[in-house]
Length: 249
Image 1: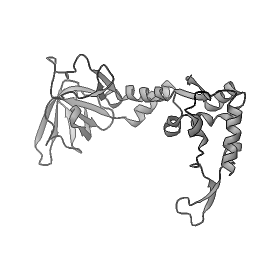
Image 2: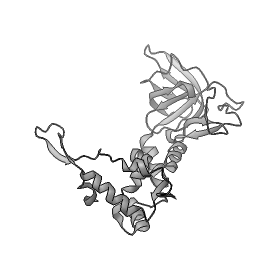
Image 3: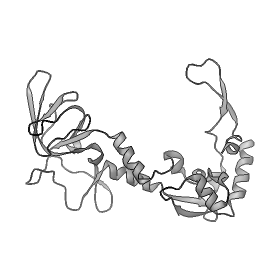
Image 4: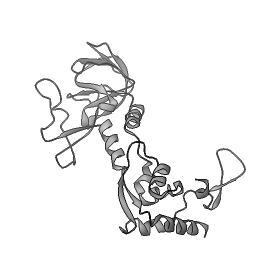
């Protein structure tokens, strides 16, 4: 890897509060060769990244040398932007870290009540927590931390004037398993009326629509990273040589 980075030009950079400038490699430096070849089918084939695959391992597998690992990023803009895909277990861990809270939902009107910062208490579960934010178009209230609210209970809260407010829930779940959006049969985002409930008190979702949770969304985005273009074995050495030559210019 060091043999790759040593070809990047040196630029002056100031770290934090330091007074003096430090010479570092300009990692934002780009070369047009990638734009020229990444859409030319004669240069590449397709591959689906598997759990456990790493750039250096794949480079050695396909080309017999790990030094071509960076070409996967050259050939795939999405990898440059989002990084190498995670293994399945890491995706689950990540979404729980990024979305660690509790989501409660209601079909009732939320405007003007249950404001951010208020504390919510379940009348049956006794669960309690602070309101972090509200998603009006989904009828959701995000509660800080992991709380065990009853999905169909009444919750209460005191407003700024110490008056009691109430809401009846239609759902309660972890944030990672809560609704991110809805899609139709074509995979397009669609809106669902958050005020429409089934006879059992849960939210009505049209039969042709599918609920996509945060975990589903993260998995989808991660899976999209796995289908990549890779340089053909016969092309990798010459692309590498040309790329390094241009970097030195």
